[in-house]
Length: 73
Image 1 (cartoon, rainbow, N blue to C red):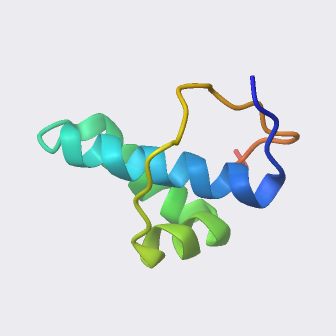
Image 2: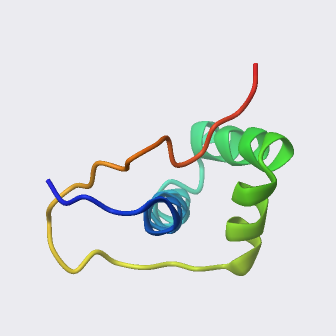
Image 3: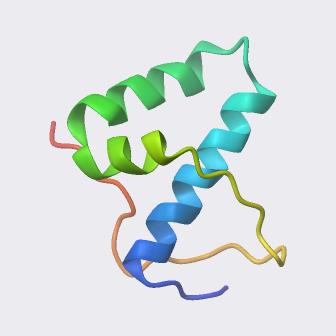
């Protein structure tokens, strides 16, 4: 596992979700998750609006120091 800082982990998670939403365009699950996160997380909304889509340079998964996106319940 690679350890990323909070900002890098956030960008990575949002980027992964953006790629997944493109791959599964007909699935309500990613679309619903994106709607919910956009409503409850200004940081997620900011990152999502940026349009960033990235690819990991290696196949290692990461372990963020803290949750990348947190919503209150």
